[in-house]
Length: 406
Image 1 (cartoon, rainbow, N blue to C red):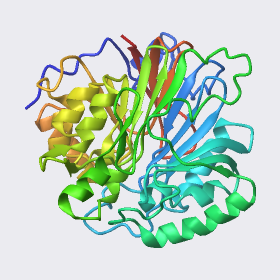
Image 2 (cartoon, rainbow, N blue to C red):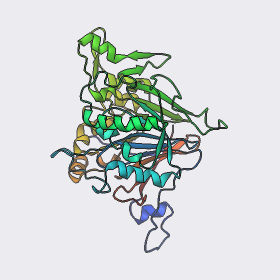
Image 3 (cartoon, rainbow, N blue to C red):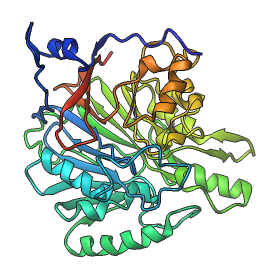
């Protein structure tokens, strides 16, 4: 049982009339609390939306100058019995997940262009929904974890969906979308495109941490861990999750890590095995918010990685109860890995999982379920977690938690 780790500096959950009153939505003696809606992006803010569909991972970002980026958008056509059915599609199963994501983004921005599109790795729950978003939006710049060596180390890639995606990609490139290799170790390859006065340039940076088994060394170079592993073991195939790309976003005192389904071990030149996930975490260092690797599956978020990044907030894009388990949540909450309070946000939690978490003293650190939106204030000194209803398209707030970037 993990206890004593659920204190928070600032917490306001919009649950019930009393809490809504604290948010300014319920006057004393009022019969009905006002429903608060997501306020939208304002210049100077950094907004990170983990859009919950129950079938995929989807992250949409609006940078301080209005530059936009879609990082992964998936779709799972066949939900395997006994694996995913306990977390239903959201809002429902009447549309593909990419269509729900497209409609969500349409409510956020007036323009029909998205500056950046990035795919972390070749699993359908991370990229198969992108053509659905493209029915309303034109992507201007594109990165994936392998270009120009698509297929290198291929093992367990979603080949069927990748073939469909490549057909769409060919058309998008012919239509003017730009593509270039994701350069590991560089800073600001993904950059602010609308900050003409360089108002935010000194405060905002994106570091390319890893991709396709290559990682930044934390200084001025890179380490090709995948090539080293292949040479040491003679095995050319590497699990697709391990090849995921990872980036680190900084805005003032705020830092955000996201690494797709990053996990796994490599073998070094001397024959010793090591956690590649932990190595990437070490070069990232402590962060404010960490997007949970591999949706929270037990093979990811190992102790070495959690200790390295030690966030105040974990945000998880999970679509199966197998990705929500006592083992992973226990590691994220363990005081043995690092001290201090922390919160975990899942898009949806089945009742039987919540009972398990409660019985083991882990429920107090959980944010309300729904779309998780991280809103960083201008300058990056503090941020909020907005939880929005994922079972409809109202953008209603069901919870707010506030954090300082210290």
